[in-house]
Every structure is written in C-alpha cells, then in structure tokens.
Length: 239
Ligand code: PGA
Image 1: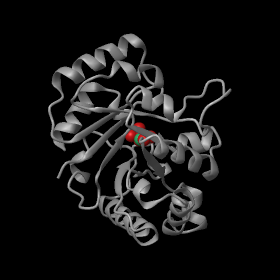
Image 2 (image 1 turned 135 degrees about the horizontal axis):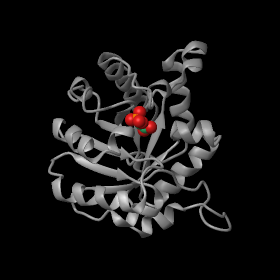
Image 3 (image 1 turned 90 degrees about the vertical axis):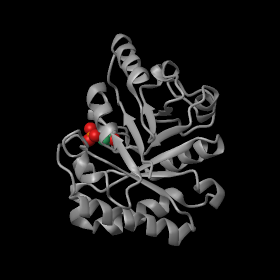
C-alpha cells in the first residue's frame, strides 16, 4: 500500500541550497508513494512537479486582516498548497500554541480545502503525569471537536512523541504500531472517521526499514533527514 511521506524541512536552507535540492528531487524522485514537501513558506512556489505535492509548515489562526507576518489558509490555497502541518510540538513549545489556536488553524485549513497534518504526541512530563493514551485522547478530542464528518475526512494525524523529535531516539516499532492503532480507534469511535496516521520523530535511512512495514502506520513525517536530498531519496526508495 502507498505510504504518505512528508518532508518537514523546518527553517533549513537558503535559496541556493533549495535550488540544488529541487533539481535533484525533480530529476531523481521515482516512487508510487505520496510525497509531500513542506519547505519554508518563501520556497513553496519553487516546488513545482507532478511527482509531489506541497505543504506549509504552519498557517495563521486568523482568516484574514492586519496580522503582520502571518500567512492565511486562503493565501496558501491560492498558490495550490494542499496540506499544512499544524500543532507541531515546536510551535506548541516555542511559540506557545494551545489547543484553541490549533483548533482555529485546523478550521481555516478545512474551510479552504487544505488537509491539516495535525501533530500530536506526549512529552516526558506528560508521560509521567498521565498515561500516553490519556494524553493523546484528550488532545485528539479537543482538536477535532465540532467539525462535520465530511471535513474531518480530510484530516491527517502525525503521531510525534516530543522526546523522539530530533533526538535520534524512537519508540519501538511495536509501540508505534500500537499507539497509532489506539489513535485511529479514538477517532473512529468519537467521530466515525477512518483517519490516516503518520509517525514522526528521528526517522532516518538506517532505521526506516524497522518501521516501513508497520500495519497501522500510513506514512512518515520526516524532519532532519528530509533536508539531505540524498538521504531523503534513499528513505523513499526503501519505503
Ligand atoms: P525529526 O523531526 O525527523 O528531525 O526528528 C520530525 C519532525 O519534527 O516533524
């Protein structure tokens, strides 16, 4: 089955570096998987190929208006962006985004036919103070409440335990598969939606073979390893 592979390039690369990356990507990408590229906002229009789709790394919680520095879902739609990452743990921790803000962002995406890739995942503290399951359940119910079923069908969830992001440490394949099964079960019982769920956190060319066959995992959100084009292509090839 095709997997969804998202490159979360974060705040990496300059124009010159991105030019090289795009050239190699456009020349060499050859896969049946669904590849989605999330560069910085300013580089989105440079990624043009029928081999992949583009994704923003964030979107404004506001619809439109005087919000200096913000980018709206409608603006992203106008340049043909089909996906947006929302609620990434870096946005939550560093930029203090809470559930109400993330909920607004999901709403604007859905209203503009953009699929939000909603990131959820526990940190060490939450792991200790409640079970991972309790924490994920609360987050999912808060973030996905009040949307009609037809809209929720466009949501993708990325399970990214915060302690696995950029650390080189991952849960075991079994833990990932079980947690993603659990996430799907919550969404199915609460909203009657069969949601796609990705795993993200320290995926690289060495460990992808451990995770690529997991039954419940619909794909991967790849940070650091996606910014090296050779490594990214190698990961895709292995999947
Ligand atoms: P990582 O990041 O692959 O560098 O751990 C994943 C993410 O932040 O989405």
